[in-house]
Image (cartoon, rainbow, N blue to C red; front, side, top):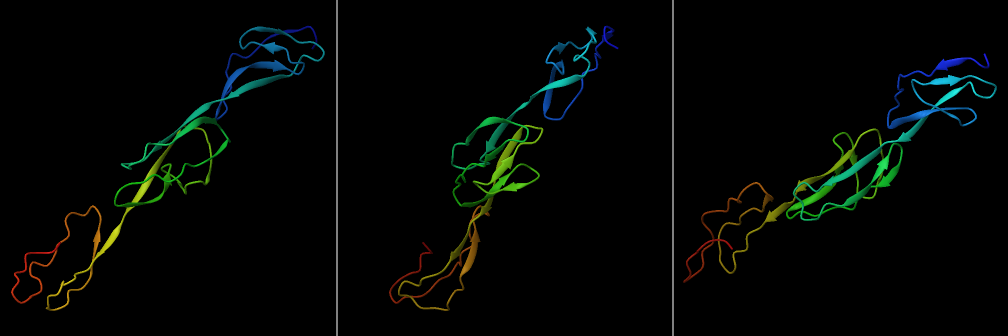
Length: 171
């Protein structure tokens, strides 16, 4: 009823990804939570006013050789392109992970309601070790795979023979 004085609710509403700022009526007049408000024609509907929270975007290169990329803060619903792939000796970059989903370098990421940490995920490179007798003779030795980071490769203790030479090892 026009002319009545009411007390605006002191209960602060919540909304994921936003901070409550104030109440405004349909004419744009502010109404402070917990304060008196006079109802009148064109001044009777109160709308919550919100400001989007700012979330940080952090990259973790997870032992990579590259400096971690930087990304400006974003708000809920904003989309940004995920950084290019970092590098790491002996490893191939697989993707970035936020702990729940995986993202290829350059793909879109939509910000939700929390700070974002994107961690580089790596796969160790696999190398093939083959043996060249370098002029010697002997039973052929099969090629073996070596996965980077798994410790030293186990090489055969003996090797080929060659007239007037002693086998000293593999190089």
